[in-house]
Length: 147
Image (cartoon, rainbow, N blue to C red):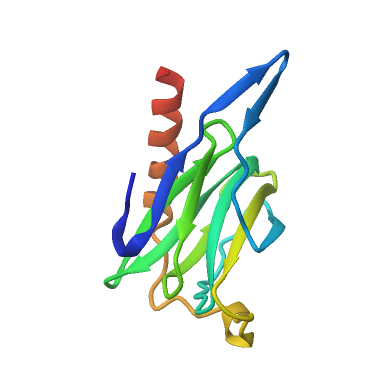
C-alpha cells in the first residue's frame, strides 16, 4: 500500500515454525529500538539524511505525517505487523493514546552521515486532530477483528 510523498506501508507475512512466527527483517545501516511513552503526543521531525523503516513490536500508536499542509494519521499495531518507510524530507511524529508504552524498531537507511538537524523536534504548525487519530485506531482495530 502506498501513501503520498513516497511513504510506503508493507504488511508483513510470517512463516510459522513450531510455536514461533518468523518475519523477514529489514535491511538497514542502523537499527534503533524506540519506546514511545504512554500518552505521548510528539512534535514533528524531518530527516534529511535517512529513511526510517518503522515496525511496531509491542503496543500501538498513530504515525502522523504532514504532507501538503494536511496531517495523515496512520495507525500501527503489533497485531498487524507492518513496516512503514518514511523517506527523507517528510515531516512525521507519533501519538500514543494508550496507557502503555509502544515499542518500535526503526531500521534506518542512511543516505549520508547523520545531520544534527535531523533530530531536532519541529513545532506543529497546528494542533493534531486527536479525534481523527483515535478514529484511525478504532477503524484499524475493527478491520483486524474481522480477519
